[in-house]
Each structure stands twice: as C-alpha cells, then as structure tokens.
Amino acid sequence: MVDIERDRANCCDRSAMMRSPAKSLGSRSPIDGRRKSWGDSCDVASGSSGSSVTTSSSSSRNPLSIAARAISSCFVTPKDRSPPSSGNFSEDNKTPSHPSATTQESFPASSQGSMRQGMGIHSGGRSEPSVMRFTMSDITKATKNFSPSLKIGQGGSGTVYKAKLGDGTVVAIKRLKKNGYQSHLRTEFHNEIQTLAQIEHQNLVRLHGFLEDQDERIIVVEYVTNGTLREHLDCQRGKVLELSSRLDVAIDVAHAITYLHMYSGWNLPLHAL
Ligand SMILES: Nc1ncnc2c1ncn2[C@@H]1O[C@H](COP(=O)(O)OP(=O)(O)OP(=O)(O)O)[C@@H](O)[C@H]1O
Image 1 (tube, rainbow, N blue to C red):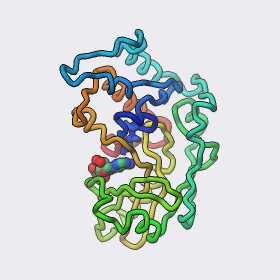
Image 2: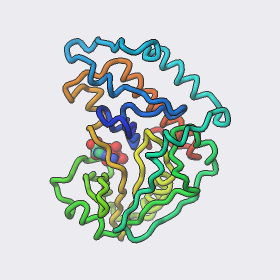
Image 3: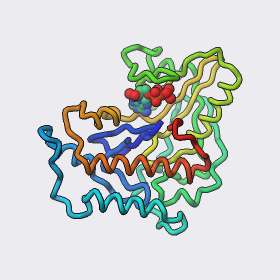
Image 4: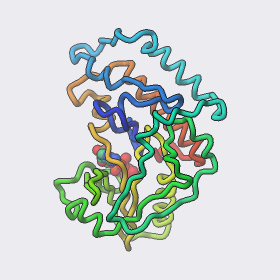
C-alpha cells in the first residue's frame, strides 16, 4: 500500500501504497518541499562494489546530515511548518477526470486539513476528497477483460492489472478475491476506500476510484512505474542502490508512515501499509 513514488521517475518508483508507493525519486521532501536526488545516485552507483558514494554533492548528501534533518523535521509541529510554495505543488493540483466513470463519491475530509499543508500533502484545492465509482464496463474495457497479459502482480488479497482508463490515464487495478463477500468484508472494503480517498501524500499512491458490484470489489489506484522498491533494494535491476539512497528511501517511508499515523486522522496498524 505504500507508494514511495511520484517524481522519482528514473529509479525506485514504487513504495506503496507507499506511492508507495517508494514511489518517486528526486521527490520533494514531504516536510519542506525540498527536492531530493536519490534517483540520481541510482545512476551513479557502480555495480562493482556497491561502495561508491556520490561526492559531487556537499555535506547535504551526508547520510548522517540527511537523517538528522529528517528526524528533527518530524518533530516540528504542523503549525510551525511553512506551507509549500504553490509552484512546488502545481502538478498535483490536477484533479483526474474519468469521463467513463459514472459517479463521483465524496468522503468526509480529515478535520486536519490545515495540518496537511507543508507535509507534501496534495490538497488540490479541494475541500473534500472524492473518488470515482467505476462501472464493470469501465473496468473490463480498461483491463481488456482482465487480460492475463496486463497482469502485473499478485497480492494476498487480489490480482493487480495495469490498465488504461477511458481518458488515457494509466492506472493499477486491483481485483480483490471473491470470498463470498461476507458483511464484514464489505465493511472492511468501505473503510479501506474511505481511508485511501483521504490520503494525499507524495509518497503514497493516490486512489482513483473503486467498483463494488455484487461480489466484485475493485480498487483503482495510481500506477507506479519502474518496478518495486524490493527490486531496487535487492539490486535486481542491475544497479546498486548506494547507502545514501537507501537512507533517503527509509526517510521517505518514515515520512509516509508519520503522515498516516499523525495527519490523516487514523491510527493505522503498521501491517496495513
Ligand atoms: N500501484 C501500482 N503500480 C504498479 N504496480 C503495482 C501497484 N500496486 C501493486 N502493483 C504490483 O502488484 C503486486 C501486488 O500488489 P499488492 O498490492 O496486491 O500486494 P500486497 O501488498 O501483497 O497486497 P495485499 O494487500 O493483497 O497483501 C506488487 O508487488 C506490484 O508488483
């Protein structure tokens, strides 16, 4: 669920829902809007020893400095944070449109809207988060009737497909297993949608919408490119992720978890990430 990614387009993109998914290298700091550059270091790291460290940057790249800054910023109260400049967030102010979707659902916004400013959270100028309710026709078209060729993953609770919506948006569609659709699962699903709808953070995947039709439950989220964080951490992509980049990932994950725990208004258990 963790998507550590959005702007880290050139490297470790997915962390989850950490937009998750580690979802985007070179991303802004969730705290102060700084741009980070661990995507660059992925390119620089040599595959030989894994010990090469980028020295072009100054002490700002020193892992200890980075950690110290990140940790201290986590303990700044939200009111003390400067709101990000609008320029930093302009790309996130676009509200996705899904012409083929039939209805738009609104969920109660977190009561902590003001706290979300300056935390890498995308308010998008909306007072309430909203998600699309898709039809089965939308989903079958987008996934070419759940074509195996579009399957990109298998999780514990369902199968994930890469799909394209009617407006061209590329998304990940998670089709949950059909478990007889007991009432507690229905409640669980609704709670998950409601929670996802309110998450607006650069390091977490964004919810596009959902479908609930008899025993069919589907979640449509932002598609994260460039593979999983696991693949990058394990150097499965032929490049060694240097230590400072790994530290950046850990910091991004910490920011996202801090957000989920403190600013989204829910006390999420860690295993839900
Ligand atoms: N938003 C996404 N973008 C790209 N690929 C994704 C996305 N979400 C999931 N995937 C792919 O699908 C795989 C399974 O994802 P999923 O979220 O179902 O895993 P999980 O964490 O095991 O889920 P579960 O909550 O069911 O246990 C991932 O490892 C990844 O390869």
